Image (cartoon, rainbow, N blue to C red; front, side):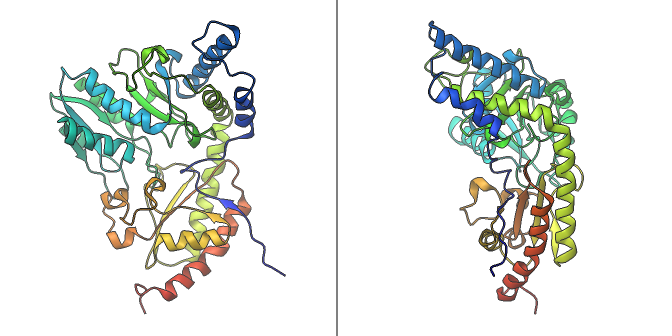
Length: 391
């Protein structure tokens, strides 16, 4: 009799399964409600109304005004617009960007491109061993030429949540635009743009049980940001191109769903996350939890398993029906160790042993217990073949 094999999806930080409510909300826009929102006839006006209703829903989720929400193709576009658009719009003020060593590539690579190809100045501040940014490092890095500071709300790999309100006070005092990549937090924990004090915020639909290919950027009223895509006056002239009505409707449904279940989901996932971490640490030697022990996403368990490679672990987990990731999902094909872990002071050899389990709204206790049951034998088998394992 064959051993039971479950399917356990624990890579929700990479992408989530669209909720049924989201799929239902999107379906009419694939066939019946296909009108161009810029048209004057009824099915066009219907699409326009859908966009504005969606804008309201997304705004409510993050504590913003509807007119401060612009729809984009996702988090990467929003990040690019935040940095490039701000520097272009405020070029008379200066040419300096500040960001951190653990940002998503959508921020880091944009900032590096602006430095190398557009002649801008870039300062990358460090983090401590828990992945935390010291607000004083931001304060010291600000100069009279600083235009924008970008600090992610929570890290996509290790899950550490930053104290953005402290950083925003520094930026506001210096008259500097403050952006945060909140792709990992919107829909997972409470996000209020006014409590955080940010001027710009990026979010992505597929991280909160919505569709891929749609996201948004919050632009606080009065913040100067140049449009990133040219060619039309859609989105109040902020972003050209016929709107992705189907995706926007799905994002709105995901936002409404998140508002209704946010507190209870976070509480449940924190309990399951802690159960997973404790179970792994109790049954496997030489395991380290990465990131802040308490200021972390409720669904993130990022661990280093010594003497073996995370890639091998994930491939073996896949044979058991368990989906997890090693390092950043966006760079999973690269052989280089995670830039986040290196910035936190993890040695390159140890960084290769990283595995990220990210739980979701459908994760159950049985799923967690299945991982706790299967992982020790898998690790023991891989360690027995590894030349790095002490003999």
